[in-house]
Amino acid sequence: MTQLAMRLGHWIDTFWQAIGLDFHGFSMRHPKLALELGVWCLAIGQTVGYACLYYIFAALLLTWDSALGWDKGLLTFAFMLAILTGAAMSPLAGRLVDHGRSRWLLSGGMWFGALALLALGFAQSYPVFLICWLVLGVAQGASLYEPCFAFLTRTTGENATRNITKVTLVAGFASTLAFPAGAFLANAYGWQVATWAFAAAAGLIGAPLLFAGATMIECCPQDTHTPEAKARNRDAVRTALRRPEFWLIFAAFPLIGLTEGLILTHIIPILTASGLSLAQAVFAAALFGPMQVVGRLAMMALAGRVSALGMATLSFVGILGAVLLLMVVEDIPQAAYAFALLFGASYGLISILKPVVTAEVLGRTGFGAIAGLMAVPFLISLAVSPQIGSWLERIGGYDLALYDSAATACLAMLALFALTVLLRLKR
Image 1 (cartoon, rainbow, N blue to C red):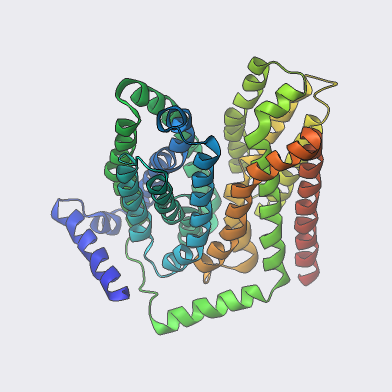
Image 2: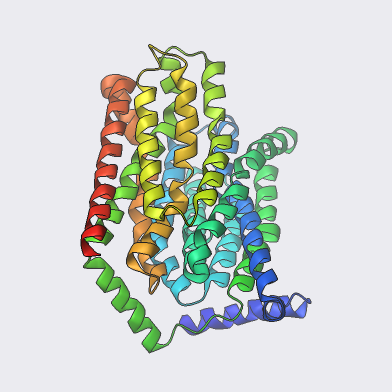
């Protein structure tokens, strides 16, 4: 299987060279320019990837609900399983990153997703729909943020935070592309054509950009599939698993992910239940996007002066503070906008800081495998948090959901505080 994958990868490299796109050669001749261009290629590729493989679900959900006649719970169940499948894919993806196969992993995952979208356009039964989303989950786990950020952290070292931030600044516009494009195509030509258009964008734009970006950043990766390299990576993973720092990070980010996912999914009904009109709730939620950009730009400005762990602590405090503000919206409606500003600026940093904190604390040897293990509970928390929110709302209303979110954020902060103390004691 390994030899077949290697041969297929070399065929992919040869194909690009045959049509005159020699990314390896360009990187050898212009290494600095290739690194810069590579990051922007990854940024645009991730934008297309998230629009096509992730946000397409929300963009077409109402259309599928009316056109296919299936219960909305069944539709969202398929999407939840896709995220869980992506989580299960993460450890394997991490090992491929360690082996220097990122250009094949990222682009291959995107092409795999394009094929799944192509098949999704023909789905007329729920089992076929479900299978297509399971395949899309594999594609997400192979080509979106988790493996991309693990790759950038492993290859660009101290510049990883800046490079990951660049990617997220651009990819933040994925929903801006997906929602209007999905609505227009579905209304004008039907949901099947819309799905096939997303498939074409993923396969013809997203995948080549990810391949080009990864190749230019790691133009001549050392073959880390040798027995010695694999042994080093295995030893690094085993050492990490024996360290309490690993388990504190392993707990902290999924816990904050539970809070983040619950709030993001239920924010409109939470705000309307607190007395805001639908228009006011939508306006407050719309502030998340711009504030993510503000938070990420602030992090770039602070890079080098505040550690990644310090910035993670600030973002955790910000999310907890935002949830506390949300609790008083019923009495102070203006608190909704303060909540949106603080929450947007804080939660936009989590996906950036998770791999960087992991690398700073545990090192970069075997980082892909370590990051893959870290991704599993984090993605699971994001997948199940909407259902947890609905369950808590049925039991005790959104007040109970908010109390639970605040308690979970406190536990996440406690884990991060314990990590900080432990690291200082070891100095």
